[in-house]
Image (cartoon, rainbow, N blue to C red; front, side, top):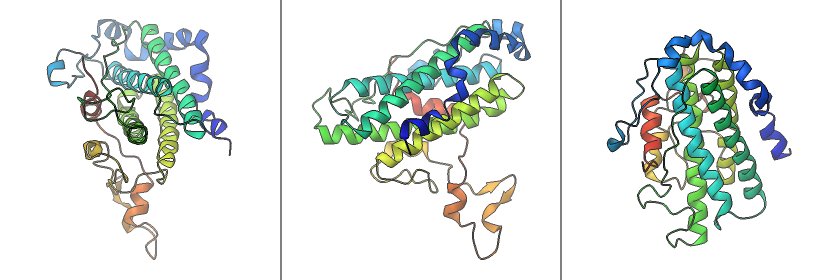
Length: 275
């Protein structure tokens, strides 16, 4: 299968490619409450010293979108820097990163247009530190050898994509009843495609088993995977379903992406936020 076509099939179903119509689309943002949206304060950088942002605008949907935008800022800059560094090999890795970079840039553009169309000031782009205080050197800025840097480039991409998948799912409830719900779930699907491709580049299965972060993933990324071992869906332990054990623990956890809270997503992203 053509990888570019595969990824593009789920590129938010043309939503992000119709710039001229976005503002019109989000003129229907009234279901959030225009007055409330106008009064909303972008979720804050006030708690920056602890690197944990508060979602406290008073409007859950606005907070969800601001969180999504922050995560997309992070991914967008990461892939742009990856394409400009010497760590990324030519061939399939570069082709995949180029395509994902286009998607992430479009997601940023899309979310900013949506918020502005609703009369809400988009949260400012943070300053990122992809070394996480010196733990990583994916862009070889501190002398890492090319093989190590590339491994870290893939590991960080996997962590960011897996976080994005779970974060979008976790914010779905906050977006119910708004025009953003469908778009957010479409972006969720795109992020899942990204995650699968990155995992395959790392020689892994395209999905998560239990709370396993996968071979070669730094222990610091375990927070991304905690909770993925859940086997209860809709109040039912799915491992008890079927005959002759078709719903094993492994297959049951592989079948679902588990949501994470906004606080968890922010805590993970904050490892890479400098200011």
